[in-house]
Length: 86
Image (cartoon, rainbow, N blue to C red; front, side, top):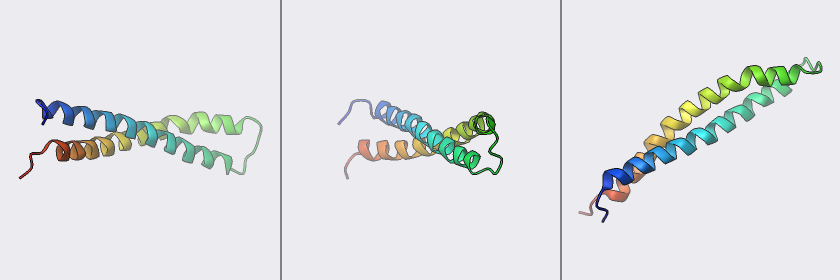
């Protein structure tokens, strides 16, 4: 058994929240960039302008959702790891 189970739970929750936010932000940017490519206006440079306009919002939305989900799931798994057997 660990001497400090709170430290393990905290580390697991924070690291899974970080990686969840990173992965979810990349997924959201990919989905947003597909929206730019499907646009009927295919003027030169329009795709780059669309990516520049949409990417920050997609990163913010995806990372926020991923951080929350990853942190909650990481804390749950950490709690299961450090709980004492009955």
